[in-house]
Length: 354
Length: 90
Image (cartoon, each protein chain N blue to C red):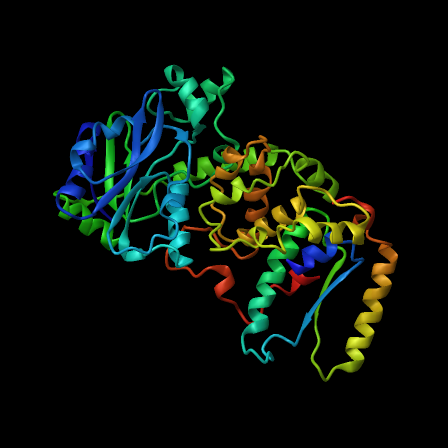
């Protein structure tokens, strides 16, 4: 791996260099808005200011990959985002919903994030970046990271084309993870040397912590529990709209069969005596969880988007992980690994059918 | 999704079948199908909904096997009793 160690202050030059040298035509990257953080699509390098104060900010609003979903354009888009967002972008490439040659994926280290409204409200306490000790300290004050982040075991910048890793103090290691990434950094004016970004011990620690947190998360283990869990669902489908890997051009649940109205609904009620309305609450979520089960990157955007505050992390990422374990597949981990539903082995899985 | 819909609509059992893997008219069709069935059933298992779903590979020339399997499945489903979903307002 080739990369270089930089002071935080020099990150601005690297990102500006990518635009200035036409390595990318635009960048999608976080920006500071008061106490909060949001994304901007930037084409003029002069609009980039002190990115080091915001790219590591532990705040999650939207999944950046959802912004570029379906963008099959020739212009090259650089995306500076957290590992879960970059992993979603990689899944979109595999799903042919994003042009691989049209993106430069730049991943930043993530220690876990707060919902953006929590982050903004507690900015004075949280600051521009956190580490696991700080997260524990804040949890003591009742300021907790999102459930999706607590159970996340992929927080290090080790996916995509370029990694921006925290190296302690005010230093960052910027390294190319792919040939494309290395070329982009060179073209942006960085001189690269051989860099070792092996953080196996740190990764092990994160995985152990994530596993413990996952075990502590309340389980939905029966159909009755699921009904109870989804009771307040208004079938607004926000969880679908913000999901970076839920991509059907025309969702079944927007069609007459999936979203029946009027006479169709009366006929259904006739057959069953009575039906829940808004309709298809259970079927919608069960179908959706199956649909995203192999590609869900467990970013938790669905939970953040739920207007009824249903803790959807307990449903989507948790169930998807079970399916991913069956296929030994970690979405977004390896850009070359085929999607589980597009490949097979001749002898496999019979035990899952019993 | 059709399997899910059948269960939620109160079907007592759902049977998913096909020719033996490797013997599909669509060449690779049932290899892919097996993956999809495995994914769906993994989810249903977590929610305790999998008991009523059965899947076996039986070819068109295995009449006896088909009849026996259907008898076994019918017995198993009878033991489970009617699907409680049928009377629910879903």
